[in-house]
Length: 196
Image (cartoon, rainbow, N blue to C red; front, side, top):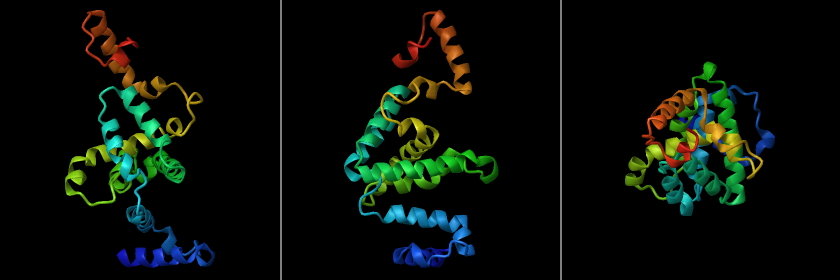
């Protein structure tokens, strides 16, 4: 596997002109995904950038789901243009992969486990960050895949944020919140209190 990845990396470094994408080696999904991860891991500046890494981790830990999503979106739009465009393209591709999860078993969560630590990282290998931030790395990438269209639509043109959070699964929870609210004891975050 490592030899195949190295060989393919060398071919890519020479340029696309001489690459035969019909060759079976370019159809091995495990090797291709490993090659893609290797590319992002070797970038001198991570996709989420060193200076914004802590901000992304902090944003992911916000308790209010609306505030969390808004903050993540702002941080994404603050990335340098080439980072933003690369992230936009990659997350669109991962969204397409996830949409075919019945065949490939790669739901957003699985893709996030594979790509999260490679994409959301710092340049230095800090073992403490690797361990303590891993759930955040997963969740950030999973959220990007699940809400790709919203994250990469300009402010004001996107569907209302609350529609992203209110899915069929969440309707049951909102019903429970409404019953609690009627009793006068709503303990939900302020952003959800206005919904019930």
